[in-house]
Length: 104
Image 1 (cartoon, rainbow, N blue to C red):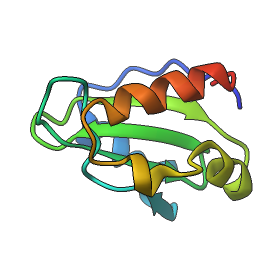
Image 2: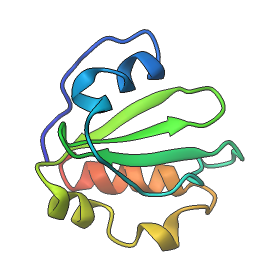
Image 3: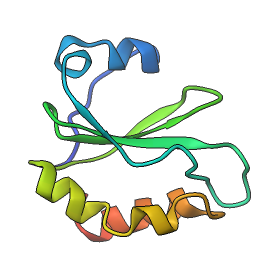
Image 4: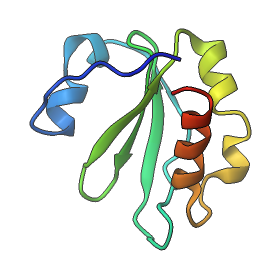
């Protein structure tokens, strides 16, 4: 995994509509990720062309690039077991900690 590039965008829509992202296939990893103690849901997806694994808050549209991975097998490795984790309290926090431990 590589560190995400630092880019400035005014909002999620501006970021996701960037041509390199808008034209790329995405792998969706669920839309029920939650921060600890919150019922707000986040969606986690991987963008093939950029390698960005990102989370977006479905209510506020706040977003974060969690890490950058080189290819789909690396994304699948990073997200191993995601279906069992997604939806539980603190699931997004657990994912972020796991990605950081992997070097993301």
